[in-house]
Length: 180
Image (cartoon, rainbow, N blue to C red; front, side, top):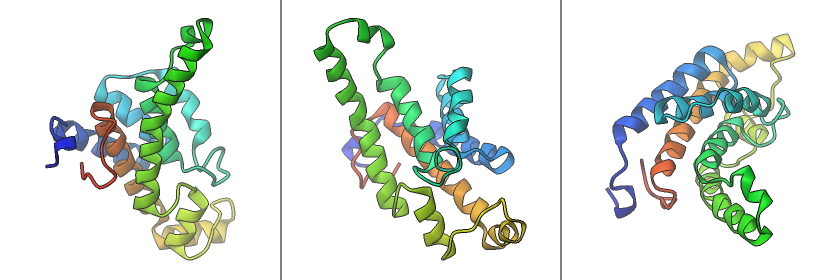
């Protein structure tokens, strides 16, 4: 265990990872499942935030852009490190300072994600895994998605990303090389 992973409760991370996998496997909606698993296990439950996160699924509105596993996890980090709306009623310099401080752990999560999965873009991750892009809206392509194991692959990404974000709630300064 490196210095930057000391004090992180592995049992909590295991629970987050397991819960994220259960949610995504059963209900789909990568962004919501990533966020909700973290919220439930880490005592951050916010139904409105979880509800709003569904729009980020499938790479923002199912457009295959920024991966939902990452955006859901980023929302969890924002819940802890982000700026409160009341900050926008005070000095702009203070609000901007808090913004930049909140962007740092999310940026670190995104860089870890990119290194782990090759991209932060859903379409690129899917294409790298399957060798092509397939659509679940087209019946014969949906069948191929199943045959290639895309749902299982995405479920693992959601679970690992939720685990990493939960660790970053305890230590936002994890190294890109730290295993949690």
